[in-house]
Length: 490
Image 1 (tube, helix red, strand yellow):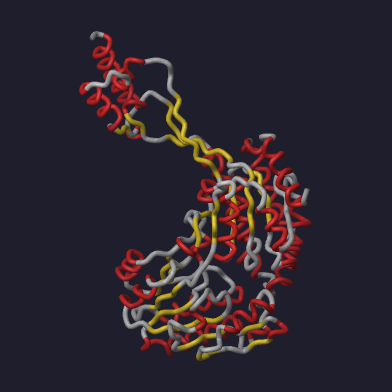
Image 2: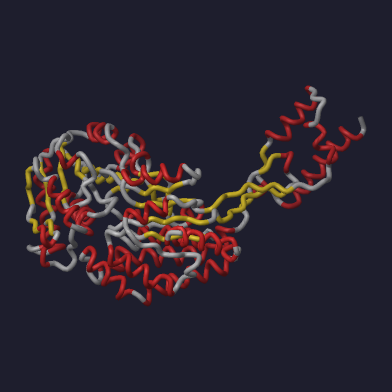
């Protein structure tokens, strides 16, 4: 039996003990995870420094603060999320208990990504714990130092039977995918996502796929370019451009292209100094394979700003490309690096057409002071999420669903959306063995009169939340009296 199979079987056995059914157990595990984040900041930061050259203060900002917020919300809201949820009834079921009961799915596989290895691995884990599941955690082998921290330290804080960490590369992931899970949560690229869906199909396992794509950034002539370009520069070059929701390319009128370049260049210097290579807040490409992939995108581009690079250090300077054509190499796949192409469009109509001719992105960014234009672009395009007049920060709002559509992913998470995604929302109806006269209209022989009663009882919706207690009792009394008189005096 492989190490991966043992981990899954151990998690399944632990789940079947039923201890995750207890909300107190789930809350204790979430608080332990919170304690891990607070006590192990140094180890977390050291691993990220080695993997991605993330700075000491950038680590909590981009990786762990969001996790703390997510845990705090889950702990405070768990009883509410896990409670039975009442639903609207019809007259036929007005005296019954009708509700939705969230229940754990079972054993969840969480496959993390390397670009934000804590944020995108532990956030789904928080949802899995809150929903009462066991979870096998597979950190990305590409961010190897962070994976080692997870492997060594998470079991010191969490139930190591219920939440095992499995490290390794492609072979280990393939072995995990041979096992049976109740849900697979994957963050990464579309090519691997297709492999995961094939593996999941064997057991009809549901999946959540958080992918990416080329997220467009439209700049309207009617906006404060200085502020817009400052926010775009931050969103694009954070983590050296290795962010799934980074603005992938800019669409703007050719008349403002030079100003856009000038403003973004100014902010690059403000953020990362005249020499970003020596700035502790500017990261590195994860490895040389990705360095070469990103550099190959420069082959047919015109560099307006940046372009400096050092393969031995996996360094690529913040770079802007001007007058980019739609068929350029940099426009054929998600960049996932510090290159920012600018393409010309002469109107919002042209921008909308350009966006809609391509795969649906994970994010759409719109910079404009025209609210009607913003609403129009939202109405006439499709994307995982939309953010107007800023970049990235919608990821931090855990009351918004985060996820893709089409090629940018399926399913969403964050906050209660994570809890619901990793729960089975079980429909429940509890009747009593009484009032059988009410049911007479559904039993054979069927007649026009019975059908009329059925239409009245089934199609009439009753929102009990809008009725007072006395009004409900009066309605029930009248309803029962009519039915009893009709069917027991025939």
